[in-house]
Image (cartoon, rainbow, N blue to C red):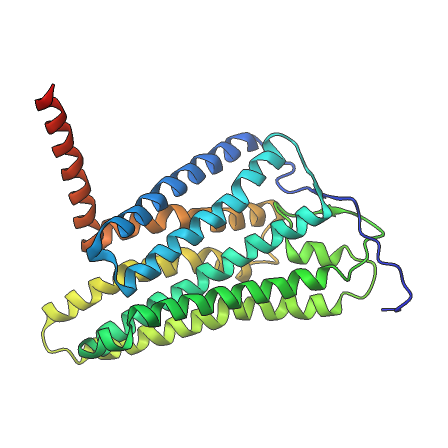
Length: 318
């Protein structure tokens, strides 16, 4: 890029996703319902972990972080989508657009890295059960989560920083449902090769390397389980991993499906699929942990018993 060239930054961008879809307002209502459910469900999970001393373990610190990230991710995406398309406020300022992109991709990165942390926790729990408390201490878990946050923030700050060097002298219409990285840098009229290279590297950092680590982890877990003599012990160990395996499938499968069929998928179908891939995991994650994890079930039962006892005490006093 010519060093003397003036950077043209538009006053606003126009987000143009979901165009030409019949009865699309029902889809926006569906997204709103999913958002409310995700906030309530993840709020319950975080409250249980905070209130129940038995859940203050390394594993549930990671679960708490995943619930927190899910709330932040849903809150950074869905309300703006509703405002943009349902209320037809498709204009977004330049600075707000970059902020919007940062938070969406940062939470996407954190969700993926958090699944890696949970898979590491299960790997140690099954392959080194006697040394689990030494290897995966609270200090270790906090350090891992802090490292994930640092990686997620730095990577996405670089992505947003590279966008600020771009000049927009043609269209300002973003063909996506949010301020997406690829549609943004493709609008530039100066050299966007660094952004193109980063767009190729980012999926590896956010998706492929974490997924490869998870697959290697569960291969190692499978080998370890095959060495356990009793079928009952193998099933018990497998159940401890089932919730996390379902989370991994929910997060990665829609993304892999869309990327695998990218050229064959119509733009609106891709937009809907990717928006669902962003919104559904935060709704399903807490449900899976409540249904699949015995400790969460027990904690929830304790809360209901306390509420029931308090109601009985109040009625007796009256």
